[in-house]
Amino acid sequence: MIHSVLDATIDHLQLIYRDLATLLEECLTEDCNASLFCGDWGLLLYLFYYEHYIDPEADHAGHLLQKLYQQLSENGSDGYTYCNGITGPFWMLRHLTEFGIAAIDIDDLAGGLLPPRFPKATFILKKRTLTSCMAAPESFIFLSALPTSQRYRIISAGLCRGLNQ
Image (cartoon, rainbow, N blue to C red; front, side, top):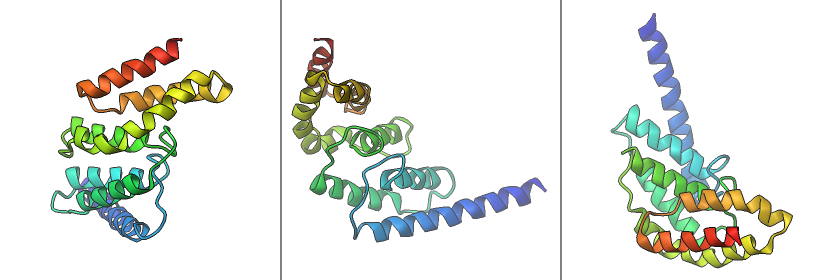
């Protein structure tokens, strides 16, 4: 009984995996969503988990990560939230690395993508409007998704000082 339930569950997970991989491949020709919660990066997170825990022979996640990252680099994202910004993808990359699910050089990936966004983050925090109050928690989330190199720690400290002013 338990084996048949487990087999059925694995079959369902495999169907979901195949559907998501196909969906992401098709999406790469359209305008993709940088969201972790309700977009392509969330789907990618499932693919990585499936390949790590269920079927290590499957090989879609790495290839799709490269393509989604290229789209994010080319098209950018003005937001800092998990829902519409770069916080979600960078949190996911750090999460996959920390738990040994993928070997990703976050410092290298962040190099050209993150620094152009710091001036806007600083501006939002200094405005002291309702929008900036709502953005403050998301900015902390954004900071936690940053790489751990000294360069980003210095920038993060500057942004945190901006919150305290």
